[in-house]
Length: 404
Image (cartoon, rainbow, N blue to C red):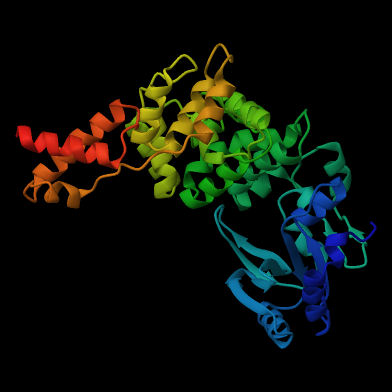
């Protein structure tokens, strides 16, 4: 394989030279190799080496490169150059596995390291001179869109059940129909073991799957194979998910995994909270799911502009945008939605011009009455489509006080 520009970039060369200066053997692994072979843009650069992690740190620090022991017990050190991270992992072999974690020992055997990887396309490695190492025919699989496990699929999943979800995620990112039947059969058989995984690992893999260019077809397959039923039975709106993906592409928007998850779920607010807890979503992610699930807003192109502006003010710009996308995805008629979403995107949500100090200055005693008075003026301001300025709002406040 010809050397790629990302391989010759100054920061990349600096890291590789720091390691090889100490006699370590190094190769590129992971997504940078897969994407380079497919002609896709390379993002993250991962490196494998035969040097133990402590030695990796020594070599990096000797070259004045920041070294972060991000997963040193499993052999991973992150080098940071110019703000860019390079994940460096020592070659390993599995000593013991329990379906969730592996006990490993470090090795200098590149084939043994490749053999412990989950998929053939992940067992590829690329030397700095452009030589490709492919012990399990991963390059042919990659170009064919064939996602298959290294060796026996069932054994690979038994070693780490998360590999089941990773198979579907990589199928969404790199695969082409039909799926590898042996791999699919093993995933179907082992799916009942998914609840034994940590929620954090499932969350990370699910969101990466939903961030694929078009996950709907693969999510459909997961439903048909009874995989979803074992960890996300609420994921029934696959058609709506597919429509959100289409709309994002139409608008030129980046894939939004949480929006896609919200579109996929058919839940009420209580169940949305339960799903968020089960997946250990962040508070922000949980709140997005719940806000979508609990809304009964009849949002659509025929809605009066003042009404959707009030909803945007009360619910927040992010929530109204999520609701619009999901409502559009579930609509029978697509007419007018693009214009509505465009109008929402450019409308600047105004700030209510009064505060508690204004209420006290108007003669209202500190306490609950201040909030009540401000809410009354705010409701009047909203009903007027936010047209009243500060002076008009103060006048309204004064009128309320005088009538009290």
